[in-house]
Image (cartoon, rainbow, N blue to C red; front, side, top):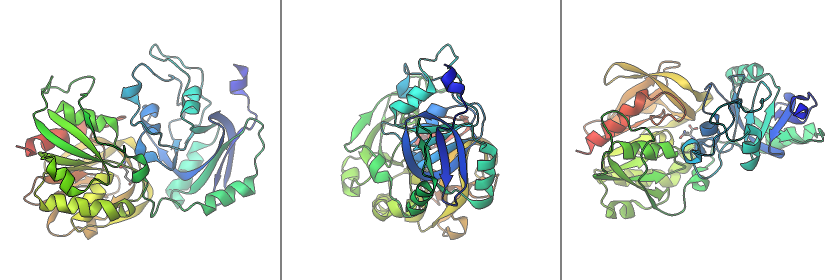
Length: 384
Ligand SMILES: NC(=O)CC[C@H](N)C(=O)O
């Protein structure tokens, strides 16, 4: 046990700029390269680290105490957002203390190790967050070695040489390879939707979907079939769905959009009602004539205020994105429905006169507040 609290250096975080942070390793050993971002959520570390949208990213938790309530396996399905592991690394301020919670079934360190995620603790996460705020999200390498020996110049080169997220189509590695049906609802049924039967049928195009999106769709009475990201539009239309959902996912929307946008365009032209979430939102915007841009700091957290212009209401939402739709690029056929009250960036669009809309944030939360659940209801209602 004493080993856990030793201050011996067993891990490093190295930025492409050469900035180096020494700390104590936790989880898997080895070295992983990725884009370093910060997340301000104070709970939900299992959901965050398994969110496929974090592929090729290293998550710095701004909340200082992470992992102290351990991990749950009993509801692994509920706390794991996808079958494939997403984040490459995790950065913590305080050392992860032994798990203490009545629901805990394991230590975070073991959980990280089982998923091949490298962790570091004992680093100044405020300094890392300030760095990202001032200079943008850097490419970095996180390395963990119990012998404590690191070749820093080699790690800096590894960070510099990595191509980065711009231009990266990561969705093709994170979607499921074959279609499947999803019938599981949320564990606690949302009010007014208790035990709804799946009457309307939707097809979800998978770019690395979070399971809680599927559960929420089922919870508003939809039966869901998930298809791989490259499924041709004619195959989707042949399934005769009542609507199509475009999932979240990792990487650059412009890169994945090369094959996804023509499919989305064909579905819009076929008058399919559509809901896009995060990467799905970004690519719907591209399909309808908008453009996406890389953000400096990105939005990653569970406390972001967003205004829905269609109702005038403000919702507190879960966010995880490093790219955004450029509101200036939106053609007249689109209405900007949602904006971030942090920086005014675009958070939602609607195709005028059609049941086709999307949001940048995460109405499924997981983790985060459930203010935006109404978007699933809005979509179900739009299907008639
Ligand atoms: N959560 C998501 O779908 C993220 C979308 C995209 N990869 C981004 O970072 O902006």
